[in-house]
Every structure is written in structure tokens, then in C-alpha cells.
Image (cartoon, rainbow, N blue to C red; front, side, top):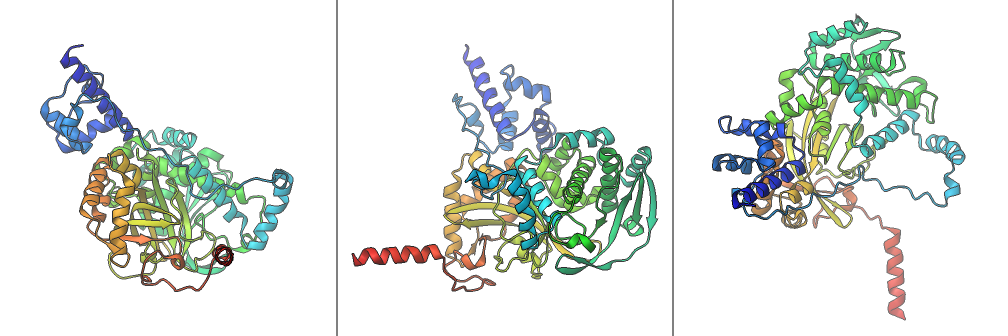
Length: 521
């Protein structure tokens, strides 16, 4: 093998391994090159020839490729075929699994009898329980539902973006009849609280969709409702077993009201919850087909605001980016004050700071979503780097959050974020060392501080490889220590908003007793 052939072989192999580890297709890598330098950007076929060793890139092209992956050009030419192994993918969801021992207590018959009793005693509705099951399924499946994706693509032919007129034509093509009504927000009951709610739309079997005329002034929301009802027509033949679209519900969207607020399971709880999820996922896939939307996000560097130009709600943009991004370590939640979750996805296993069936009694006030839920004045949107102290672990996250209002005028906060550790590891940085430096700096400054220079450069480099602008934006502000509960705050001084607690852990008391007894001996 000649020196030229050997060089091209190693260079191509390293480029292919690096591209695949970052989840990019050849087409996406070519698009990234076009964004940076249209004149020197290679075609997909030329990139393929580089990776197969049939072509050696020019110095200018190599510099362009190196800048995308935040490497020195010489790294590709060092003759070393080795490349760092990819970071292991964590299991979706952070909740510990249930040890099903002794096994006889977890028989199907006992569970069928015990679960309704458990729900009744805890005041948990059947729909809430169904949404917990769906969320766990969604996280374990990593948001991958190919049948729903294919159904949406067959209807929309991957057209992007779709306007209101296109959605209306698709609705008519599939036999939907649209009826408009006028209704203002009303006071609705959702479990243990009252809230302003507005009926946006609902499906009446077999093919009639009723739409609130107020949606005509909200094209992004109108598009989502039309897409969701179209999904019900396509997936379920419009049988009508689907919840209405109404604002402000605690979980899954619409307030339940009426007999549905009773604890326990009803025959249609799981069916309606699953149907609602399917239609919502279908709507996202129809409005944001995977590959076109992925290219859109790459062009816009994942800025949520870019969706406004093509009439997509921030919620649709945030939810859908967790699915289509080549980077898998995402989380998303939609929270209503004082701490109710309307939706949640934890593909990166982030520990939640509050329960999603009840209001938190001691939330950490330094989570970005809680700072905005509390109504603190300042920016209505922003990015934050957070060190989460969870028992003996320190975890590093970055999120983009924004305060908004639903159609009934209720304030809520949308937040989408990523786990930074795998990105740092792929970038050749030891994430544990970076997190330790950030944590130390924060603890010296009452829990928040600018990210130290070396760690900031590492995060900035990883962010540029990911092509996510708001990660770099977050470096302009302080990183904050957050914790699952304010009463277990790891800060040396009590942080603002955290309540002092005299509560003791029984296991700690037990350990003290044993220690004292040993000293006496």
C-alpha cells in the first residue's frame, strides 16, 4: 500500500467513524459544509469517495471538515486509525426498576386487583396512570414509533412546511367535514383545581371536526389541531374515541372534568390516553417530517424561534427536535404553575425535581423551569447550564426554556434540554473533570458562577459539533447548581427560595446509633 493510499484510507476511516458517532448522514454532513462554505462544500458523492479512500480532500476542504467536528486538520492525517469509542447510551428514564420479588406478589391477578385500589387510595385518575405508562413506554422506546412516522409521511408526502391551506386540503381529501363554533374561555375543573380553559376543537364520529373560530387567529395552533384530527381519521377511521383539545389540563392536555375526575380506572382511560398520544405524535410527524425538519433544524442551529416563521408552535418544535435530532440525549417538559406537568419526555434519564401527579412541596428554585414558573421578572426565554447534584452524582445539562401562554391565557413554561456529558465525551473531553470544575466554582459562589474557561471552551466545542446555538448562548450566563429537592440542597449556604428543614433520614439516625454503640464497646 502506497503512502498516499494509506493516508487516504486512514483519513476516510476516521471521517466515517466521526460522522457516524455524531449521528450524521452523508447528506447532512454535506449540508453542514454548504452552510459554512458553499464554494468549497463537497457533494454527497465526493464525501463518500473520501470516506472510501478513493479521494484525498484538499487542505481547504480538510480544514472545513475539521471545523465542523471541532478537530485540528492534523488529527485526520496522523496515521492513527483508532478513534475514541462512542459513549454508552443510557436507558431511557431515570426511575429505578421495580424488583419483582417475591414473584408471587406480582402475579397478573394480584396486580389487576391491587392497581385500582392503589389509584383510589392515592387519588390518581386512570388517565393519569395511563399517561405514566405511556411516558415510560415512550422513554424506553426512545420516541421511536416508525408506524406512526410512516402513516404521517404517506399522508403528507414529506412536504415541509405545510401551511393552513395545505392542511385544509388534506382534511377535505380524507373526507373530514369542518364545523366552526364560537366559545370563550371558561372556568373548568381539573382534578383538585380550577383553571381557565378553552375548548379548541374536537372530533365527532365519523368525520366531523369542530373548530373554535379563535383558532383562525392562531395558525400554528390551528395546524396542530387539524393534523391531530387528521391522524385520528387515518389511524382510527374517525371512531371518535379521542379526547377534545382544550387548554390547561394537568397531564395529557385537556381538563378531564365530570365523572372522569374520579380516582381509579375506567374502561376507556388507557384507550383515550393512547389515542391522544398517537394522534399528537402523528401531528408532529406530519407537520415536521423527519428528514426535512432535521435539515431545517441544522440550518437554524436548533433555535426554537425559527419555527415561528413557518407557523409552528414552540411546543411542536421542541417535542419534535427530541425525536429527529441525531443526538439522542434529550429531555422536554411543559409545566404549569405551581408545578403541574402537562407533558414530559426524558430520553436522557434526567431526574425530575417534582412529581407529575401532584404539586411539589419543596421544589429547587434554581431549575430554569421553576425560575420562570415563579414569575420572576426578566427574560421570557433563555438558556441555562445546570449541574444536578443527585446523591453522589453530578450531572451536567443545558436547557432552553421559555414562558408562554395557552389559548385561555394561562401562563406555562416549555423547556427542552440535552445531557452535555455524552457530547463532551465524544469531543474527547473527560466530562467528570469538566463537571467537577464547574461544581467547585459554583459552590464557591453561593451556587452559581460563570463556567470556568477550560470547561467553557470544551462545552463550546461540543456545542458547535452538535450545531445547537442555545448551548453556546447559555455560556453567556452563570451555571447553576440544581437539586431534586430544595430540602436536600448541596450548597454551603441556603439558596434563595429554599426552605430550611429539620427533617432527618431514619437511615442516618440508625447509622449514628450503631456508630455510638461501637465507640462504647
